[in-house]
Image 1 (cartoon, protein in one colour):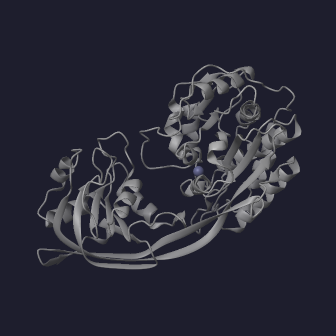
Image 2 (image 1 turned 180 degrees about the vertical axis):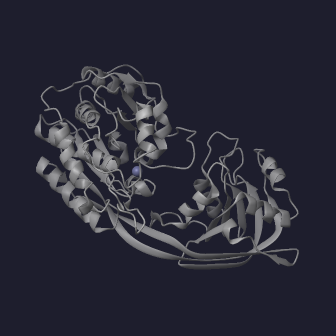
Image 3 (image 1 turned 60 degrees about the vertical axis):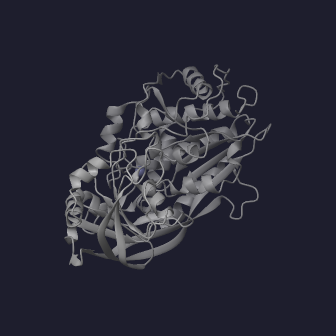
Length: 502
Ligand SMILES: [Zn+2]
């Protein structure tokens, strides 16, 4: 699971396609052997052991992880996707960059001035970038009420606010707005930090490595952040008051303000290009009708995350997301061993989820089957949170026909439903989002996102820390029950008679 710095405010995509309502009859097969805590524990213990080095993409830990998952899925009876160039694997080309140094000098009214080193941080798109005499423009949120870029930024340094705009239907986050400004021709984008995240924290996270898809659209040549105080100092040199500018920017018709300021910006970064991999397997259906069910979960985690003198430097990611992979392995075994389902069922372990759902986005851009053939994508992430008996919450709810399948399957298994919608806050923080954005109905169902105090206890403690280790204290009862739920959901959505496949 992935932490983002902003509260989620919209649920576009996932619930957008509404089918005619009406509960469909659902087949739940009693013949599948229940998944046990011991079976899940065995996988998690191994995947989260130090030998896997925290499963960081592009490391030996990746090789071991691939070998294990492919081995287990092959034993289960799954096969590689026919025609794939690299059987079982989809290479995902990534580029990692880390800022090394950055300098910014400004000129206003013919006079040079600099901001304190701690007020600004810069990153270059290439290993070495330098821009001179770039005119600066304050663009507020960078978009207008219609969601379009609000000013002519061609060849300019756009200075933009971090927080979501207080207007408009879609509220693109700062990363998307920064990309829109780059697409519109901005040479550089400086983001004015929010008060919501302490500047010191933001600085530290921006100074660390960042990874993008190699085929992602190029961002601005130089991007960076200004502290709130640094921004006010810069605007003051331009004869403006920061508070008044922020206030003016709240209008949906705001068109930006060209500043009598030019900038010289230089940044150096280390850049590393490498391939990581999505692991994709197929269980052919008995009566294929061109529709398919896709199970997915991310295999990657944070790798070596601690400082040199830490006693435990490896973020092993036992709950996040060795637990989800363990469930994917056992679900595959049940579906392959029992009565063969009608439709094809695909299983995918994605890479680089922790770096921004990159593996899932890559698959969505380069699918191995037409996305329109996927009747449902079921994502499994951070599943070892709750005990047996926890109600089933579903992220991506809102399509009545799909909701009915989950309700019927869960009810037949003796599970209660949690329909309060609290789980929706996580919709953008999981791989299903990348598929949902392309129109694939993507759901994440289970108990982990139902009991908020339990989930928050995990997020506030072991989550993304070296302490997310395997131990006998990890609650696997809920995960085992959720695994059974997914076996039954797989059968229900792969049944050509009871589920039309949209
Ligand atoms: Zn995570």
